[in-house]
Length: 115
Length: 112
Image (cartoon, rainbow over all chains, first blue to last red):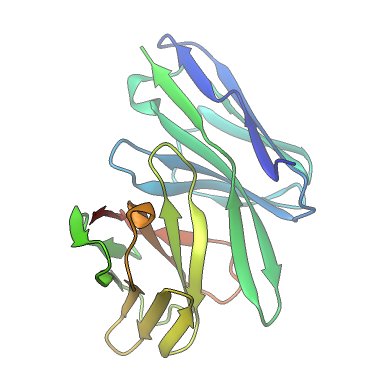
């Protein structure tokens, strides 16, 4: 019963290629995220969607394009991959409860290596 | 630029001792604070959150928040080898705001 799942888990590709990563959550949460974690473990938010609507778009190259077909799915498409795109990409979903606060649930990550 | 800073470590603590992890943040108006644990090769998982000044205890974990000094800390009592991981501090600048800003993490090693 995976709460937040991502595919693929590993992705090795050549510079210049286009690739997609898929994310699905079965928790019924309204808000989903994409994070990038670099080799130094710094976890940086890229995008956030709330009920299919883009609400956070950090300073990310426009080669990265998120798509949310429904509130349970948030995919990430990357055009013209560069060496610096090599990182672990985490999808997350957010549970927010008034008075109780929030919890973000992370997927297992997609390890992207651009050669 | 709102920032969250942590000592990257590694922090080595003998088994059974208290591990103390610290985090400072730049925005005085920040509302909510989180500690995530990340084992090597795994995804982050929430272990503690705190909103009010003072201490909050959950089992062997205690989160401490001092808004005047803009720091939040995590104490782990009776440290176990299974506590060896990277601990990420995260700050939500608004209460209920969707954006979390993470620190760079502190790598903790518990020495048996």
